[in-house]
Image (cartoon, rainbow, N blue to C red; front, side, top):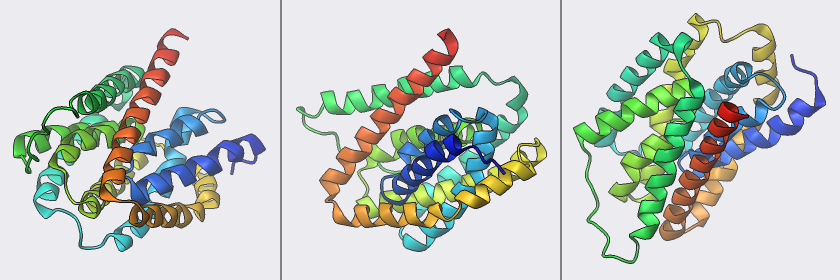
Length: 253
């Protein structure tokens, strides 16, 4: 088990932030946990510590949003995500994580800016589920979730333009990432990502998982649909900036 105080100084707020995001606002800030923990341990260890915690959060999220997700979207996204996870597993030894972060950052920031810049014009009609779009973005989300727990931005690019009812949107992200995170346990184990030290550390942080989800659910119910969607776009934009910063800093630092 990790015993350095600085690790818990960054890990405790990281887990709570992720729980609030997953419990109430689409999980967009899930990307923050690994970089924050990586300030104290290696990024591979940080990702391995975080995955069991995410899986516990998902169980509480499933209970909070049970039966409320969009089934048409889920049929498309779950199948597509499996392809992305498989690609991530096969290419794990050869991936340039910084290049992936830069690409995701550009997508997330560009998507958010496009939404804000076009707000003065008449909004386009809501999109419906699409096998083509959902298949592409679901695969990308599965891949980037496997690589860096960064599946939120690609999923948001697909779901946000549909303008689903806010609880349906949130529930759909919950069931999607529950599937993705539990499937990831198999290749993470096969690739040797887990060890006794990481698992013991995850167990120590585990009680924060339900607390973070509860806070997120409470905030989700307290805000209006307009505020909810504005916050989702802000979260996607902020996540994109963080990804760009991490990618640029690691590439040129």
